[in-house]
Length: 66
Image 1 (tube, rainbow, N blue to C red):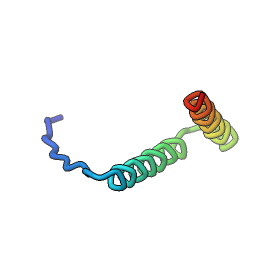
Image 2: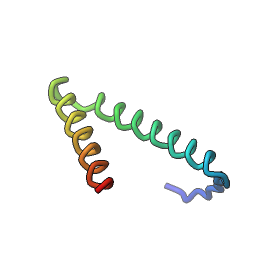
Image 3: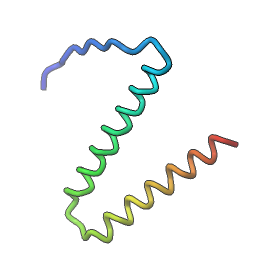
């Protein structure tokens, strides 16, 4: 594998940063779903995994509010 240089131009405004966060979150969620779909286990187990992840996210959000 070779190293790759990446140049990022980040948004300077709050609306731009918010949009970038949403776009990255959507990309991450889609990638996670694709990885789960490829797992060699029954659909029921995949759904349990997704529900566990959602429960964890909800718990983190709740803890962050307190």
